[in-house]
Image: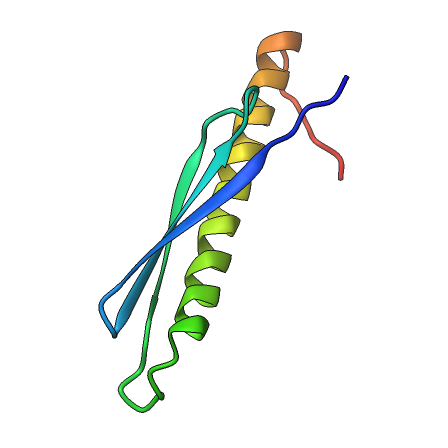
Length: 87
């Protein structure tokens, strides 16, 4: 069996704040989304790439937590007992 999920990142910026929306896509992907943000300090040069990297990393961390929580819940539902992921 082959299954593929893709992560789609989209950004919104206003020169100071950068927001990133991370979304899992694919035929069998769980359809989760998460958001991350970054704020440029007034002392920093306006480099959009850095704000995007920070916001994306935060969005992906949040997406990871949501995905793990969903898997934990499904393990508990299947076994009717507390589930523990080992990784």
